Image 1 (cartoon, one colour):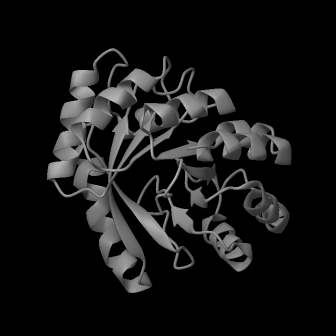
Image 2: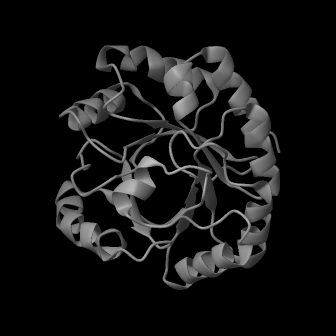
Length: 238
């Protein structure tokens, strides 16, 4: 999943906001523009579209389609794999282990690859859906020591990936200096999402040490091939 050069460009799709009829065209445009993988999920589900979205994506996509679950209800046999998230920056047992126990037998029955992922919330200047729903406090942007300790704990617990999230619609993305500090502490791949609105800000995170950049909200508002290509060029450049 990790590119030999540059970083991975992942597009996050909210199943409540995707027009299923547009998926074939979106997939084609994304793949031709340089998107490396799709993530599907959200903090809440307000519709029953999750499985239909996953099935339609898999029917059309050549690139991997992964579940980025907001809860144990967001599972589908049509995915290539699932980020098996544990919210290690919080102290709410439901998101540390509770949802994982609920989902594990279903994941096994579906035959999905589960990628153990240390999920870390970073403050974005506002309360986001994920911080509200999970009832957890994000790590302050000026506390890299706290971030590094949590990341290292995730590595020692056997996580295969760290995902730093400022949250959907964040006022600001994770600061590059936070990524630089964490990169010195951990050997795991680092994915970063939330509040990344421009190719320039994505590039700064790559240069700071991020292995994957996740773009969601800005593409929900402005799905455009030109924007996709600019992000891909910025993220992939080694």
